Structures are given as C-alpha cells and as structure tokens.
Image 1 (tube, rainbow, N blue to C red):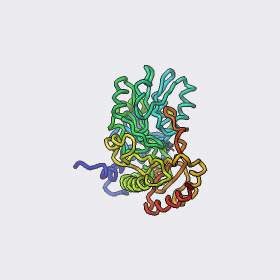
Image 2: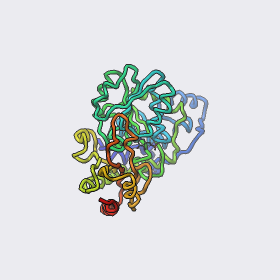
Image 3: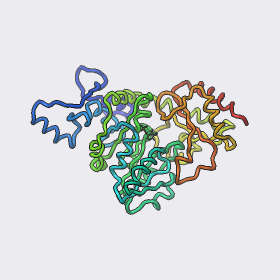
Image 4: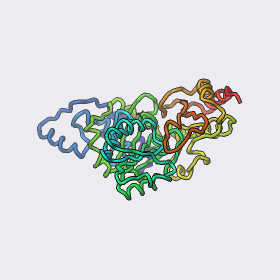
Length: 390
Ligand SMILES: *Cc1c(COP(=O)(O)O)cnc(C)c1O
C-alpha cells in the first residue's frame, strides 16, 4: 500500500518493530556496546562502514537510527547524520567540501551566523568565498574554476527570497560542483531540496522538527553520491546527538505536519492583516502573491510556515520598532523559532546581506506566528502598532 507523507511521518522511523512494545523507539543511551564474541565484534566493525548498526555510542544508537531513517525518507535522501546543533551540521558540511585553494559560493540570503564560518574557518584555511544574489543574476559569473561548493538557502533567512534551485543545480552540476541547501525553513516538510536537484539538505532540528523550543540539534541529509564523499567526516570529527534529544525530536516530528499547517494558516492571516496597516511598508511572506518570485514558491514549496518579516514605513526609527516590540504581550523576545509560541525580534537585514544593499530600507521586524488563537495575536499586534506615532 502506498502511503502519503502525512501517514509516513506518523508510521516511519518507529525503530525495530516488535510484536509487543511501546509506540516510540525507547531512548537507548550508550557509550559501550558489548558483543558476544570477537567474531561478531569484528563483523560489526566491518559492516558499520556501510550500514547503520550498533558499535559505539558516538556512532548512534537505535534511537538515532530511527530519526535518521524518518528524515531520510521525508527528504528523499540516502543517509542522514545528526549533529549537536544546526550550525555544526552546516560547518562540518562546508568543511567536507572546501579545501585549501578552493572557493565556496554562498547565497546572499543564508542564515547570518554561517558568514562567521566563512570568516573564521575558510579565510584562515586559504579558501576564498563569495555571495551570489538571490535572483540568480550573478550566479554563473561568480562561479570559478576552483569552486568546490554552492551553499544556498531557500526561502532565505529574514526575507524568504526564493531561489530557482533546480536551475542553479543544473548550472552547478554541469561543472561538477555540489549544492548544499539549508532547509531549516522547509524542515523536510514544506520544501525538499534533494527533490529539486540539490546534493545535501541541512535542517536545524532545533526549530520546527523539535517544535517545542527545548532542544538543540542539526541534521544533514545527503544523496547517495554526496554521502560517499562527505559521510565520513562528521564521525571523524566526533559529531553526535544525545539520545534524549533525539527522542524529543522524534516526538516533535509526529505533529510536524499538523503544526506547520496551523502555523502557516495563522501566518497567512497575520500577513494579510499587516499588509493593510498604515505603519507597515511591506510584509515579507512567501505565501503572499506580492512576494518576489511567488511563482517559484508555488512551484517548489508545499506550504508556508509561521515566519514573516515586516518593514515599517521609512520614517520610523529603531526606537519606534523597539517600542512596538516591547509593547507586544504574546510575542516573546528571543532568538530561534519553530516552537509552538509566537516570537518577535528586530532584524538587521543590512548586516546579514552583502551582495545586495538594504541600507535604504525601513526598520525590519521578524515575527514567528505561533499556535495561539490568531485573533488574540491580531489584537496584540494592533495594540502594539497603535503605540507608534504617525
Ligand atoms: C536556527 C538556524 C540554524 C542554526 O541552528 P542551531 O541549531 O541554532 O545551530 C541554521 N540555519 C537556519 C536557517 C536557522 O534558522
């Protein structure tokens, strides 16, 4: 029987099936794994090079294998690897591909801390890098003979710019350059980079997969050819996630589809409402028809999430933006997103972009629309915006 993704996210990754047992894979905590003979020990050490099996805690336990299996299935990949944070997954993936004398091309819309990986790791290691515009106009011109990796993010951080990923992958692959994509926005559910041609998808499970703002984790999912090339480095660099955290992410994922549908629906309502407000110059939300390259969103995304960014009219200052933020009662002020609750932060777009100039824009504020009653959120946003003078 062929099952839809909505069924697979419930029934996939449930661990070893036994006739009688708990619904969820047990939390298997281990460093040492004990073998009954030297032969089985030797056999496991040989097989672990290509198979997922118990051999040592740092190589994962059945709990991790269940999550890896579920995420691999949803992303249409070959294998997945867990990391202690999303940023660690990105850093190790970049290190896997980039070597001295090489070049990495990043999308201008990447998660801002990834720029620190470039500054603090690539530069000292004699690896050059560059950023391409999200409209793709300078993409080919910025590819070099020595380019070893394209690192993209779509929809992008803060402004949700849509890349034409299939097109970029075609151009890159014609030159044998691999493409890795930060898929935290889509979280294996709303967007699937491997299906669009990318070689590697990376997700901060810290966000929607865990879904409850109490776990840090990163996941890298690779196609078979990419796995052959980069599958060994994470383990060589001692990357592992706690089985307790893994269990929380597995638990979170059972409601991922339902939560994202609710986040997306409320965010759409809020986005349309904000578009009508006189204080707001522009709403950045890929689900809106007015969003740049909404055509790519419709083609490549399976829905929206709870993230949206507003740009205030240009006469409002940073202090005005902060007055609005402080006035909100239901929106917590804090980093990250993807939990069940609403959040707000000022967004420094100019500081997070370099291929494009954002200095002539109004104040940007990023909202994460949580699972509260959307009418309560609108009431809160209304009283906050009313605090701004004309
Ligand atoms: C949060 C985030 C990350 C990093 O995840 P951590 O688990 O906090 O390290 C990476 N990419 C994007 C797009 C993110 O939003």
